[in-house]
Image (cartoon, rainbow, N blue to C red; front, side, top):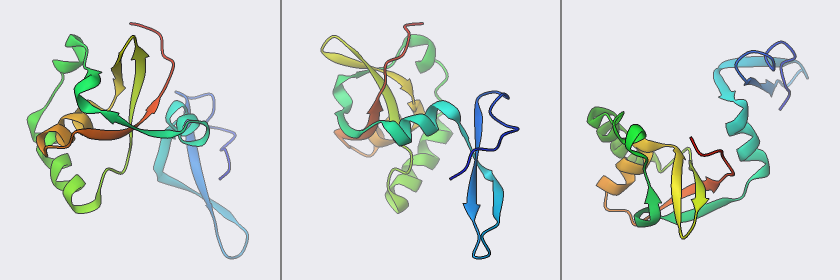
Length: 124
């Protein structure tokens, strides 16, 4: 995986590049990841979190779209959870940082735990 020199200054995006058999590397525009998510995937340990211990802030909860939850639930049934959520510790619970629709899709499927990364994030 190589970092695209022209992308690191723009909106924190990192272009993931794939090596070809010839040794050349082509960018894959469909795989542009936010730099923070890429850093989490590289440096953080994937953990399982109890869904009941994850608090969703009121402002974030207001952005919930049931159609997205339903589509993600179907995808999780077919393929499993592809992208873990991000949570930050807050006493004896966790606060959701990223992944509201994934969390609600897992909850709607009756899951009691979900894969995620523990991050240290500022309180908003």
